[in-house]
Amino acid sequence: MRILVLIIVGFIAAFTSNAQNSFSFLNISNNARINALGGVNVSLSDRDVNLCTFNPALLDSSQRGQIGLNFSPYLASSKFVSVNYSPKFKKNWAISLQNLNYGTFQGTDAVGNLTNEFAANDFSLGLTHSRKIGHISFGISAKFVGSTLESYSSMAFLTDWGGTFKHPIHDLSFGILAKNVGFVLKSYGNIRPEIPFDLQIGASFKPKYMPVRFSLTAHHLYVFDVAYNDPTVNYTFDNQGNKVAKNSSIADKMFQHLVIGTSISIHKNLNLLLGYNHLRRKELLVNGLGGSAGFSFGADLRTKQFGFSISRAALASGSGQTTFSLYLALSKK
Image 1 (spheres, rainbow, N blue to C red):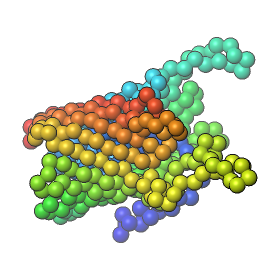
Image 2 (image 1 turned 30 degrees about the horizontal axis):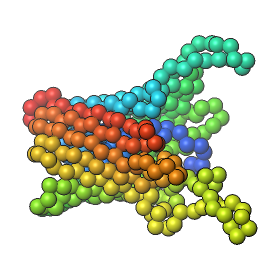
Image 3 (image 1 turned 90 degrees about the vertical axis):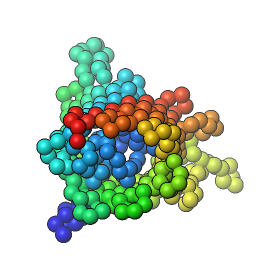
Image 4 (image 1 turned 180 degrees about the horizontal axis):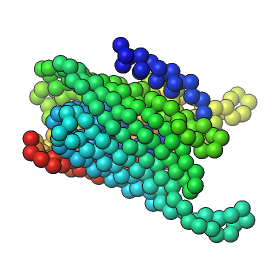
């Protein structure tokens, strides 16, 4: 009951925020497997310590003594790095560090004279713990999140609340996550940043006689219309020839909440990964030009002691996000 009360209070705090969005780097997939499966997944139960940043309930005893590394040469010259570690001497605990470095910029004064160079970074330092009761697992992550730009900074304390259910017979698992529940500690000047709250639910299933695992994840479940509709781009004409905003259909708005992922087993140690994120496609696709925005793919190689993954998610035309991930068991079980 105490946990339920805390979740409800967190929901209220998230919903009452009405300021500008910040800390949006927390919505970027920093793991190659998840990136290849569409960028959102809360139900993929596996012995990979990197998964605990997507749902703290996915942290289990099989990940004790593991260290996970993730690297993505993100847009322009920015670089996204994260490290996850689960100590062997602590049952179902993990620490995580994420850093998105935007590079170095040249400063100028009000009239354009060159001044000192400055840097910009987003970071998150988190602690995760999970408990298992029967076939149900619960987990929580506490995160200190920050954003720095030259001499300015913004800080927040956020939490992730997750749960999973793994079927005792079939290869079927469900996951639910309340992501980024918390409050702002420090703002950029007088601008109060909005916490990037999300509510996600998903399932992963592998048919008994098929070498394929399917995942379906729904995100942003607290609001129906999630896409940004720019009336200067998405428009049509009325009977008098005037421009009017072109709205998406109800079916399309519903599909924008869904992410589809597929893992195909080529060998017991090798999987091919495919994903589709409809919201990403709607937001990044250039009208009339087509393209592969919203689609993603990758490969996953694993043994008992380590796993390595690589993925590519298509963004705008000609660009994308490539991610490399590694987890390594520092000591034998």
